[in-house]
Length: 125
Picture 1 (cartoon, rainbow, N blue to C red):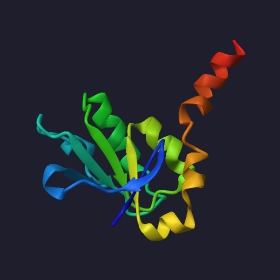
Picture 2 (picture 1 turned 135 degrees about the horizontal axis):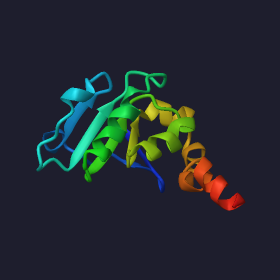
Picture 3 (picture 1 turned 180 degrees about the vertical axis):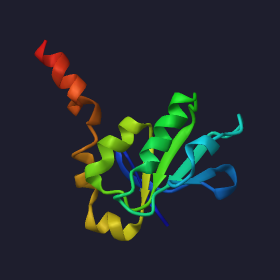
């Protein structure tokens, strides 16, 4: 079972597959369409170096998707802020990864809105 990472820390996965639409990170953005009734979407990452899923998340948000958006795969805690800024609400990681990167590593990055370059520019004006 996956561990779910949010701004509040770790939690258990409570989603069922039949109510969720999934995309692989290599999905062609031109083919990225959602039925109106879908409220939960997962974008699966094959490895932490593949950033195409961040682009897909951003495109979904720009196209008006307002439901829950989950990244799934070996995303590392250093990428948490980027995932949130791209539009993801949460990340699903394996239990083995949660042991290697404990909750405190993710919580350290959970204040992602305060550490953007825009917030630093606004503070200096």
